[in-house]
Length: 147
Image (cartoon, rainbow, N blue to C red; front, side):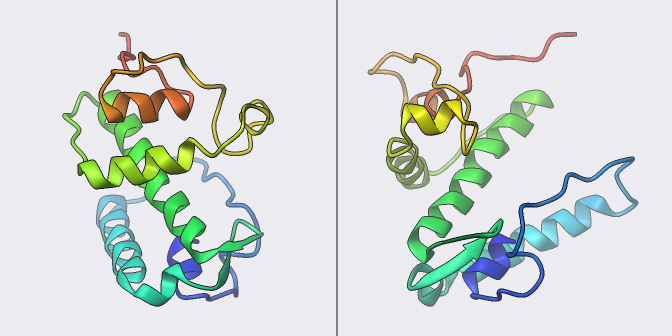
């Protein structure tokens, strides 16, 4: 949907919130995910993606905001996946800074309504930028899976 939002393609994927898949991952899922992530990155490299109005999840929003939401999704859910699977995680400082600025604009009311993030998790002000971002998006930076 965010690839389509970058190109202002309002057919299909941008008109409604996504539906969650069910069942087992299909064969070749990793190749599909890799190709889709590459297409997403390519779409947002176009400066026009960041201008005007677009749509994602059935919501009209400025291209610049859609791009930040897409980046935030990749950074934060990338961390989720890495931690859950015991993998190392690194992200570019400028990407974290952009996501931190974006996440800082979300009000406590919006967090409790579940619109974008869960309730903020308290993180020290001098914590690394990634940890502050994680806290703003409702994650505990010290979380690790059990079991």
